[in-house]
Image (cartoon, rainbow, N blue to C red):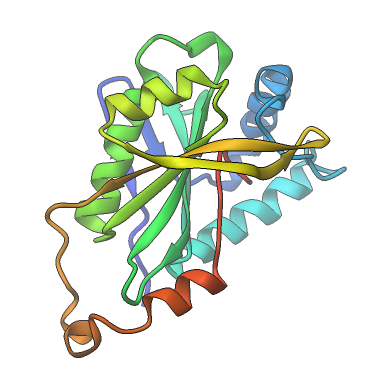
Length: 216
């Protein structure tokens, strides 16, 4: 069954899946912010800045959204729907008795501190809860990334602890603060009512995920 692609419209931005025509702008965004984002990202593939790479990624992201595995989106400026201001990903989606995902995000250095990310993530978390009917969103960040910690706190994410040597980034293992946001209005799908209490630990153990910034 085909799922309608999300188009989340805010006052200054639109959050949506990428299209093939967005290839050059995606590459520009990551090239322009390579140093800005590099401290928090894993190593990129050799062909990361090629249109061939992003054509494959866009196809994969579309397939993953249709199969309910992820929803990886970009933030577009409402003035022209061309310029990318940031990234917002819901990924590692697990259903069953868990109904949860991970959140990854980044914003262009030139747009930091202008309210772009808070607007985008309010749209994305609302979509995750109301439209995707997820119960839990998890977002993890490195302790030194205070800006990310303050952003998540403003969004209502709750700190749940700290994981030592959590992700291998920039040649070494990095600690992460673990946070989550839960959906008070989550609705149990009708088909799961008889087995609502079964299988959560098995599923989560086999499909672990983690995030500080997006993995595309």
